[in-house]
Length: 511
Image 1 (cartoon, rainbow, N blue to C red):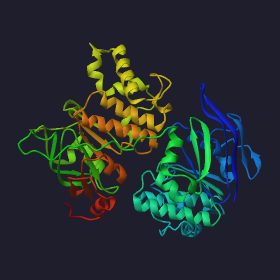
Image 2 (image 1 turned 90 degrees about the vertical axis):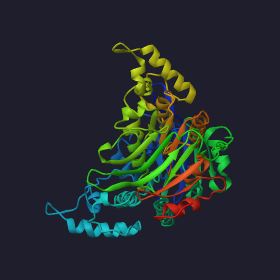
Image 3 (image 1 turned 45 degrees about the vertical axis):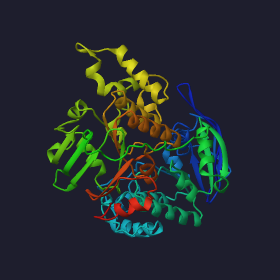
């Protein structure tokens, strides 16, 4: 198995130094974690190792098994035995597992595609990664964890000797995460060399042998994981001690039956897909001003569909009633939601949150264009003033207000999404996985922002797959399972993760 080194790698983009004389060594047969805040240089370094940034576009050299190598393309990296498995998998859902494994590397006999041979070879390859599935199965019918294993099997089939995994568990359930980590341990036992990139620090401590921290494009240091604690690793990543990842708990108290009505009351809410499949069934709850209501559940429990429908999507398939401030309200579109003071930070920020090729200021002003209009023209001075306030309030790091959002790190892109809605001072804020895929420093900042909004009187409804985040941020919690509300917790103090998970895995119960 190979060793991989970066020797004095320096990479600049339009005058901005992304990597500054980075040197590190990945030892043969180890799982080496790469940690750092968004924008620290991890993705740039991966692109150097994988041939995306070709030889000559950076200073320094990549060394494999003690010899410098020249990588001019992704294909060159693959031929050298280096495979990168990204968070967004390079697979085709409508093809079978076997067809995906051999895509671009098909087996033929006398010019005819040999499907039988590919299926049989696929069976052996799937056994190596512990996936019990028929190779003829449509890939899209597999869960996220199984698809990750197919991607790993595909890399091993192409004789990859070194695997680089970038946020591999970001969209997986806890059980899928555990299964994937078990497979990686087995691959290490067989001598595989693995680079593991994750913002989930519990995974780093669970699986890695050593960890290298990048900050502001430079290597801070490399340590054996056994020599670090979670707090010291965080301090190395962000360059400062974080007082706390979660803010002090708010004291909201119980609902007063004689007091004002809740901000949001949802009654018997149901959502169906266009083909009639139930996504949310008969869900009722309320959200109060000044609190964070956590929505827990497994992936596929209907959490995203619930929030999206409350914001005005899928209205043709929605049944139920909605009251805002005690008054019946009809939300037929996102425009209606905005008029009622509702904002949504969607799970998929690249699809629903930002326009990647638009400037930062234009993204932040999008929900406020009607307020910024003078006659038929947008007042650019007011638009930039609005964006500048959001940038300063959220500490959004960019080269300027004209910077395309695509050039920002993931954490800063998420802050742009939050900034465009918080600039409108929403009364009801719907958050779907607000910290997914961002580093621990940015998480702490977003947690503080959510807490500030609640303390200022907003009603916040937050979906998160991270149970520590649900427990650390919520005043109350509701739990969904297969589209149904299966329980709730009106007191979060002293609540254990197992209390929530026991509801998430069943169809009734709760307290």
